[in-house]
Image: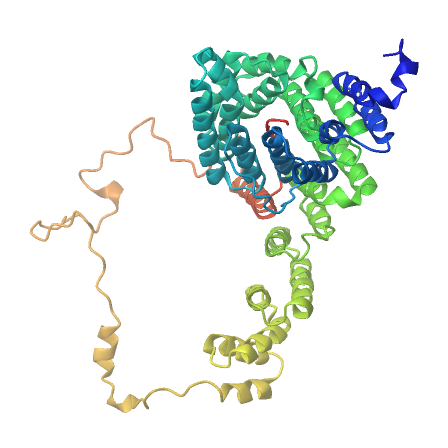
Length: 549
């Protein structure tokens, strides 16, 4: 191309020049060449669509193919529809967009396959799996008409469909079935290096920190020449993240640091490289450095700080710094007024016997819901919890306003009224008396003179519970009144028998240590489950693949 640069400058061979640039993976140069022409032919528009697709400019690409289908009438209409369906699938998967239904009939296995990919992007996994099965059937029927096609050729063509099926199974938690299908694809050794890389990556995500030897072999498939031209940016990014995680799981600390450093420079605002670095530091027992790294990233990228701060809180908790963990959690604006966050904070402050801070958490939350969702079930539930909490810790005076609010919402709530009267009795006895008038009167008057004192006394006595092996016909032991050591049949304790220990552990250990461990684990569960945030180390990514146009 460099030799004939003058000739290539002519508009007569713009398509040929742009096509060569496209095949040489110079997509930006190809784009400039195509856009330099004042009027594009249909075949140049086709190439333009391919270039835009490779550059992941899906909206523009969709417009190009839609225009071509609308204004062209030739034998290539089906191919254009296939390309358009691939664009829609890409938008659904990578941009989480929901394009309008274009009414593309799924008459070929390619169209059916791309429709399945669109469903996966929308999270409709069961429907997507059914669609892939339809695509497989269409593919088999299509190739059965050609006598020159062998069964191996058909299986190779089906490899991408099977890999996508395995991906859905993996998302559904059917990892054994997914792994079996992934390995079948690998054994076929398909010529598509992109498909091989994605399949190998997903096997690694199933293996995680197990079967490391197999993962080391599979990771080599992700390094094949030309992979970077076959996959989307997010797919390549996911593969690189997983390489760093694999290095961590295989105790290659230097390699892990090198990979995460490169990932952080390429994706400065992405939290995952930092989380992997933190996981590696925690493996090396360098918790202080890990917290410093998280704090620095949080300060530099406040938009991505929520997950980072949750990780910081977990690190502080693991070291027993409960108050510091609470301070971090209260600084997360996104979760500040979530019920799970309130529950976690109150539990932690109670554990530290910092009742004032726990009450302050309740007060701020109630104030927020009072202004945003007054009278809602969440608001009233928080008021009830706050009142019960204050009463539990003897803060009756502080519970009055909460109890009054609850009673006004439901004046038939006798339990709340009784609590309110009890609280007012310490502050304002007149108010307590006036409120007591709202208590219901007894159903009938009681005449104490009618009671028989003796029968009343004996009616209160309950017969003791008899042992399971009680025999009413057996004679009682005549020595039962004597201490055990003074009975004639006492033989003493057997040697070698020790009293069962109350607690287990090292010398000096107490049940408080076990209580602390349970507390921290329970808070971990709250943070992980309620806020959907991965505990460190972050879980591996599974990535999706669809047939490019």
